[in-house]
Length: 424
Image 1 (tube, rainbow, N blue to C red):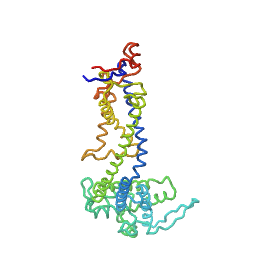
Image 2: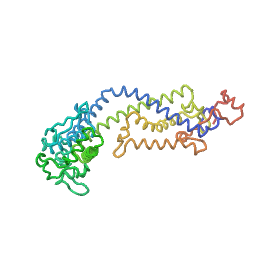
Image 3: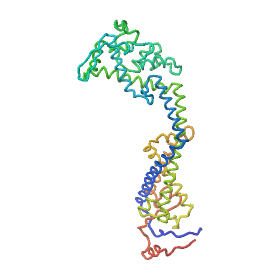
């Protein structure tokens, strides 16, 4: 049997289940806070390093390429300075306005302009402000540009099946009825006289009937009770745009290639951020557990110190250095599950998608560690020595320094370092 120093806590009681759990929780969340603080410092330094900055710049370039491609489909447009994509809502608003102007133009109705003093001017609609202008190029009609030009000419997108029916010879039905889900009865028919005379071949689904045109024009006159037609066109546009974007993301070979390039660079960035956090966590762990042990001059954690606990091995010896190292290593791994919380609050949730090997991401490891940590936390409730996973594997006991088992005179002699020595 090995020789060792009798533990100072030989005559102390095993810590209660409640104290073991509370100490564990305090260690866990205090380490999370200290890791977060250290990371903010490391990130400020690390993000400025050339290698990290280069990856960030490449990721921005890849993101811009994807945005530019999406803009080229006209399903979602870049803003004026080409720095970011506009919301679909903003495009829907302009589309609805163009429907109103196109309908007014075809029916030869003036468009109302509300002045700052609330007076209304009625002005003729210029053909340049309607879908009739450069109809074959779909100059203002974003939806037609995608469904009738981009989708039709791209081999990876050029199919128009919906519920098993091929609508390639009837794109209007596919686009307006299936994707946009509009009510066809609010639009003129194909043989409408005004449409034939002034429409220059635009789809009849872009020209409202005279009655519904008046209702939509009333909306632009400030009549807030006349929103039904506006909402129908507005939300129909959003449905069709989202339908088209989903189509692009699922089927476009160009988009898939750009996405693959983006994901490659993104993986590089997540690895860089992970390394920075791992170093932060390592330093925080050393500082928290090492400083507490140095200050107290004994093997103890912050949570145990706060709750007046101590540790010895199962034979009432001071734990061997190998046990201590094993205990710290186990806690280092188990407490790392707090990184999931840290990644969320730091805006680094994408790190969880980091691919460890094909078909398995870092999230899987975090989930496994988290489950082990939960098991470890509640283990004291189910074993007589109130051990968690780390103390169970290393065969260490957590003692309550304020609760004793032996007579007072023995206890006092132990507290005065009497009885220390070697035993076999």
